[in-house]
Figure 1: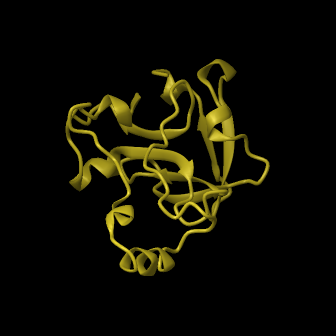
Figure 2 (figure 1 turned 30 degrees about the horizontal axis):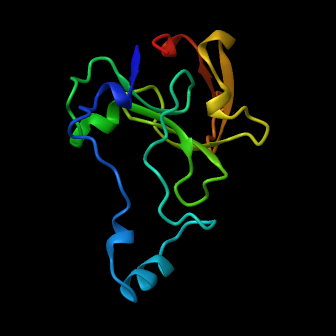
Length: 145
């Protein structure tokens, strides 16, 4: 079983903001000019969890609540936009699972935010894998939606 990122965070300690917007000009403009990200939103977002959908970061149940950093990411799967190319969906699989790595998905794949538990299993072809077994099925592992 997997659970959402939001299940692991304590609301009183979870604060996210872009640090770049706090720099004074002209330094802020110089730093933003170095950001390697397509589009006008150079800050991006860590808030990728969309309740009721596949979109976001999922952790294995055996990871204690409140644990972050270190090996915790080995027990995580993420279904989110690419950091540098936000129009391209990515699946990141931690090494505590069968296959590990960062993968693109086929162009006609459903948006992660459109995949819900009520649909049953939904398959994604993982681009960048050499084997003939290059499909990830999102279904039973996500029963906790």
